[in-house]
Image (cartoon, rainbow over all chains, first blue to last red; front, side, top):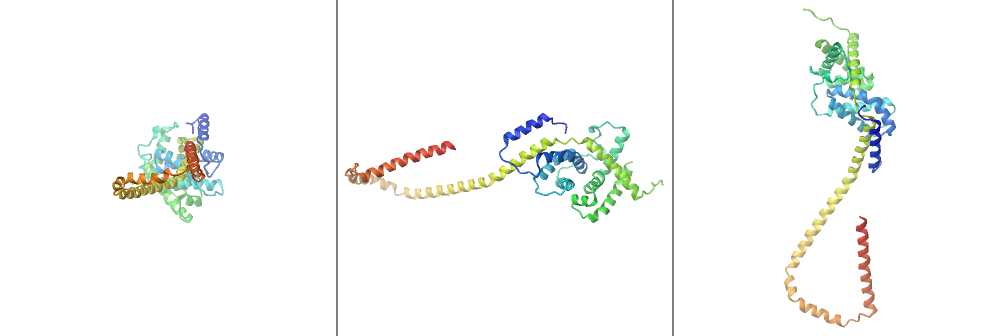
Length: 187
Length: 141
């Protein structure tokens, strides 16, 4: 979010006004959208990058996800409902994405690109986690991420992934065992 | 053989939860999504473009149909004209006689008669008004 200054935003806003030909109906007001985006874009980017295994795909699909949310006519009961809907859109976009993922989770993990300085031990540990995630199916990665990074309930996971709520407990159990096994295998 | 001990479900859950939580924290630090202002602006622009395209699409179809109709009309007219061309030279051969015959009664017309003068004036006024209207319409466009 640091690449655009306030002045850039004001300039873009002025250009928008100048080129405005017709009013376009979007699902949210600008203020509402911007507040929602600021709360959710970081976590959503994390989800997209870890599920797709490709940062570039995450960048592209992030904007597409929000655009589809804005264009949708769905009525949302709560913030959580809207967030789950956004994650469902993002999950479907990742599924439909035909691009070959870059090796984010392979042995040549992009450690050099990390913005935060970290110890060798932490870096190794994170590489292990990424390799372990890379051995899971995309749906298993999504499920674990939603459960342990987002703290989503079984019902919410089912809603996002288009599965039955009753099946989530067993699928999560299997995904956890697979992940643990992969983590032990990498160490 | 040095086998690792089996982990309980609770231990597995703790290990996985810690690993994912750590990766999630790292992902949040890596995340550099564009600002909300940029995303909003792009969404607005894209929605406008899509709305414009949706409006223009039926017009394009109508334009296409109109051009097709005009093309068909021109072909029909050309066909009729080609058929008429066959007898055109014979008509030209007798044209001078025809003109002379037509001019005979015209010479006897009294142009000061109101039955002639009124329709002639109306015709001239109509031509002037139509020309001015055409100029105004095309100037607006």
